Image (cartoon, rainbow, N blue to C red):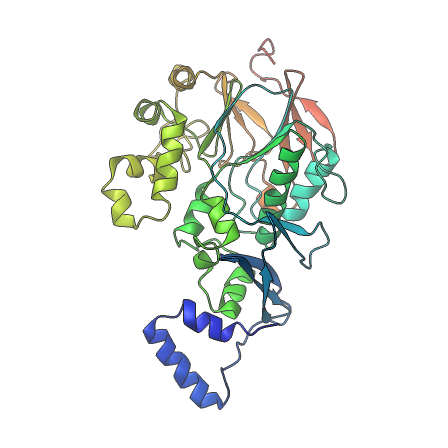
Length: 384
């Protein structure tokens, strides 16, 4: 293993921090003062593309480690300590995938994983999306992650790499994985760390790198996250983390323009976003990451009427919108069946559900593998 310390000084430290680091070196009488951190902390890998090689950082039992892996082809295998498949890393950074897709026979959607990798994997396995080893079993089906993998729980890194690898495996079998960004992805990438688990504070300290820089434009996960969308259309379903107001739909009648504005603004400073009307609309409290007005009424987003939601559906040529963000007890229907809410509380660490679309029928998919037909309680004659 190669020490991280000189690498860190060369790439990340500001002159002030370098001066403080030099004082620490002199005081310690060694090459660099060791980092004090909980011995049990293990995290990573964080992988960076550096020309024709990958630089891999990990934390194992509280200690930083670095390896350099030459890129010898289009794909490079990187081993890691988790009990799942080895990581396959493409040599070249990815490009954004399409954000509009024709209807498919099978869709499984889940949202707000929030660092609960074990529950996420259990849910996918129980419903045949993956096998016990994490291999893709969904064939040409589509898996949609409706945002918020980051924050709260202790296995964010594992969940991100799982989705990253499933995305590649699905494509090889004719299927697709769509990972939409939620407000918590945006928060971390833009430096708002209010909700991160203590494990990640410790790991960032051990690696002597601010957490957002571990997902920066050089990192494999950071480059991948920067290709993701705010909204995806599959057939006559629109998926978005929080929701889309009628005003936003009029401003962005094509979801491709909204997604392009997202990617343009992810690395913009706050004042740059505030002074750009498009970015302010996308990243603001009434934007697609934060909006809750389909499901609850608050001061800055009054509850929409069914006809107002119908205007949004008409703009995008869809029949329903699938959202996360606002936690429900179960996957549920709102606004006369026009909105399906799929955040079923996985963030709490003891429950979670998904939405299954199969043979033109919608089901609530439970952690124990049970399927319950999704019907509108107030109108049993709805078209499910």
